[in-house]
Image (cartoon, rainbow, N blue to C red; front, side):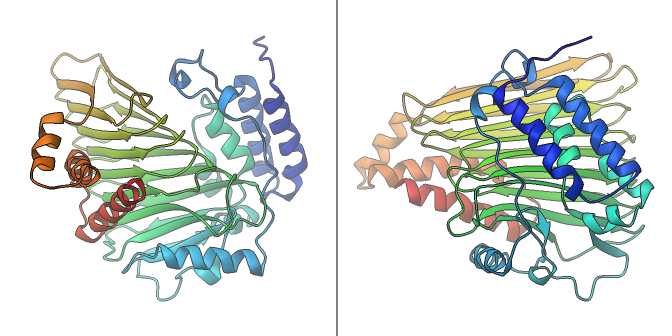
Amino acid sequence: MNVVAKTETGRALGDAFAVARDRLPGKGKIADQRREAFEAYERLGLPHRRIEDWKYTDLRALMREVLPLAPAPDAAALGRAAAAVKLRAIDGVRRLVLVDGAFAPDLSDLGNLDKGLSIRPLREVLDAGEDALSAQAFASDTSNPMIALNGAMATDGVVIDIANGTVLAQPLHIVHVASGATPAAMFTRSLLRLGRDTGVTLVESYLAGEGAKAYQTHDGLIVAIGDNARLDHVRLVEDSVDAFNISSATVTLGAHAHFNTFGLTSGGHVSRYQLTVTCAGEGSNVETNGVNLINGKQHADTTLFVDHAVPHCASREIFRAVVDDRAHSVFQGRIIVRPDAQKTDAKMMTRALLLSDDAEADNKPELEIFADDVTCGHGATTGALDESLLFYMRARGLPEKEAQALLIQAFVGEAIETIASDALREVAIATAQRWLQARA
């Protein structure tokens, strides 16, 4: 029997689950699934550096405190959340707001839903005892302790269904807000199901209300993309500088489906985003791109796993990190090509820009190829700003910080340009510019 030594943090998580489980939604089979998920977490234990996938993000060292589960938001919390949502509002989207881990219908846009679009709070689905849907929402990788923990503790989220043949012109925007009422932990999980021949854009944002500081976010997203469907996905992490964010997404593509995702992390003290994409249908196409903009003592980890399980699929990964002060950026990208996945076309490129002597970036691209008729490649670089270009611009009267900002914008631009929507590309550019202006 494998015995995992529990740290104080690990024991505190066990206590937190024991206190919370009676208030979590769903009974019967769902309660059993939660218990099994927590047992899976306990078998694995809190991740640490001796586990290869967590080598650079040792939660035993980084996660010193376990916060209590966030209470249901009251009127004051909803007011602070509303102000945060308004400050970072994106025009033309349908907002779905989660405040302190609870769906907030009064802050969400649920009127006049398009034909073929269904949106429900996860809590409602679980309380209704919809076993098949609940099983899909909770079906996930129990070999990953933090995904298992998320499944055990999830309080709410959204369940989105898009019927066959439905193409939504209006993006959906899931907004996660920490209200700042008290330091607390939030566990959310959402399910997005795209039928055949569908199309939608999904935006996810992580925000802090006024006064929200050292909170903890644990989020999970399960996505099933049907045959000939397309999902464009943009993820923006602007948590408070003391926040902790562990988020996971599991995406499965049908035949000739297309998944385009971009993530930008500029907030949070410790963050890890782990994305698993499976090309399960022939002819599917994946684009996974992202940018980390971090400084101070921030730690930002992006871990991607693309699984080519069938023939004639393609994947592209472009990742950029800009690291200042004593911050630490981590990129781990693994592509696996299964024996049957002939004619796979997979490429991955990651580059990091260090702006100080104490900044750190770990890039680990990996290829595992078990098929012989494929085209695959990867690359990684780390360096500093080009001094000759800086000198050229300063010689023409540009202040040093402005010259650096121009070079940084050009550096991250290749990844940002992969966002399909012009409007959302502008949102990402504005987010990057806020980081640069704060640095000036």
